[in-house]
Image: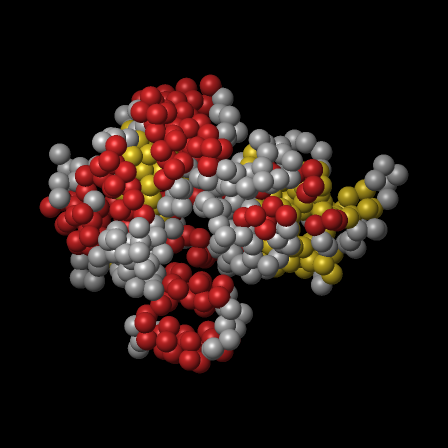
Amino acid sequence: MFDSFLIREDSLENVYDENGKAVGFKFAVRIADYRGAFLSLHNGYYIECDGVEYPRELQKFEVNGKPPRTFEEIKKCVWEHWDFDDEAYVYVEKEGGLEPGKHRIGLQQSVLSQYGYMPWDEDWVKNPPVPGQGAGAGKTRRICYYDLELI
Amino acid sequence: MTIKRGVSFYSYQQEQFFRRMNWKDMMRELHDNLHCDGVEIINEATIPNYPFPSQEFIYDWRNELAKYNLKAVTKDIYLDVHQFRDHVMNYREAAERLMYDIKIAADMGFENVRCLCMVPIEVIEMALDTAVKYNVRIGKEIHAPYPIKYDPSREGGRMVAEIIDFVDRTGTKHVGLVPDMGIFQIAPPRVNVEYQLRNMDDLKLRDFIEKNMNEMDGKELAAAIDKEFPDMDSMQKRFLGMFTRGPAAQPEDILEIIPYIISIHGKFYEMTEIPGKPGQYEDVSIDYENVIKYLKQGGYNGYINSEYEGQRSQQDRGIENLADEVEEVRRHHEMLARLIGE
């Protein structure tokens, strides 16, 4: 759902460390479902930028006015909620950040919300699905692409 | 007493996403333009800071209902068994979630909660005392492909019987059913078909479906696809169910469950003008006319709450191609009011 609108068009920017060195990039996202979710259910993203894939280990998530957290930390936020109305930021680690200009980002969100007990439940506890295969992607199974300009 | 009209705010999810309408705007639309009073919500879409809404929100909510003389009919609740991530939620924990959602529903003035098809009956049983205490009914959804008629050979084919047995055995007035009009789907909705075809990776399969979907019925198409594409994975096949699956229930089946109905999800995908009848609308993919005929015959006097879902099949292109949720719901209410006979 919201296939063309999951990333805010004008939100792509580089992320800098305290010395002013670019250490990655970030962009603003919305939830890909018609309802919010307990934050712990958020299992990361499939992200590619200009053909290069950035796995979950290189991602952080900023929501609810708190500093960016890894998805290992997010997993423990079992009583915190990402509300349907709220925008969040995805941070991606990339030395040097991105060059100014156009970039093509491929994205699939993985939120492990579901409609009750499923046959794969025990497996998902031990081996959470790797984002990008459709698991937890709401109602959209494909990767959605966005042409964004770095500001 | 007659059938009453309401709206699930699910219908306005896109307006909410783009921040063009909030729940107060939705309530005003019900009162000012739809002239109906039934409100249904998705708990995790409407309630800020769910599951810990503030007292201020609760009061604001109840005040707004009072302002427009609206009725909080049903609150739709979920069962996310992976919330704790280090274990799958057990039935006792699931019952705690359900009981807590019942309390929030009561605080907000709701008469009912809708729980999902797949919530085990044991979980409902564990929450029953709480439902009685707060006088909130638990309605289990009958969602496609689940049927109404008992048929153990079909997915979900025991569910309705299980609820009816439970109600009859316990005599409770606090458990029942929430049929979704999607079970009476007689043709794949145009907007969903076009979305699937636009987004199909296998171009050969897409061309095959496009070529044959108008000449074949669902069963014939399924058989033809199986023959032509024997190696297709099961996930892909599930998506194709839309083209190949027939209706989950027949309109007259509704007569069997009328005393158990808590409220009805008025699922629809696209309202188009009826040829030759300007200003009158229908969803050609769902048999509302016959279902409402049987609901009237059976004396149903609860709510049908519009649940517009066609917008989400039109969000893969530009902003100029988005559906108009407000107009779709207005058309749906033209149809409901006319078929109910207001």
